[in-house]
Image 1 (cartoon, one colour):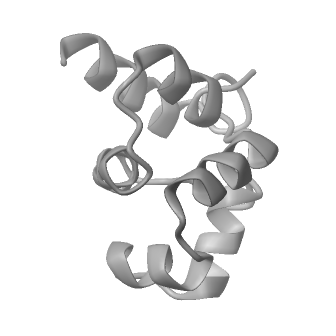
Image 2 (tube, rainbow, N blue to C red):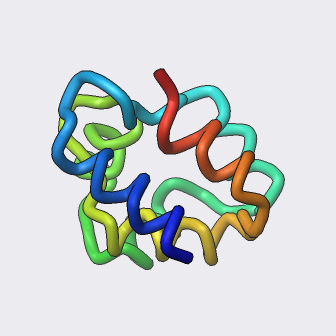
Length: 88
């Protein structure tokens, strides 16, 4: 858990550097989980446009949103989590 929190903190404070979302990997994980963007946005308490902006690196995900996405997308593998949410 400590490693995940460290990466989440780096993501929040390093806009444009380490921690960019891999949009394609996110889309793949979304399909695997059988979820829609609308459903994910509702679960995060944000608009669909807000989710679009975060997934496309216009704005940043909060650490709490990333944690929720780990659950929603069934991402228990640390390597997979990092590949999607902490891409270079």
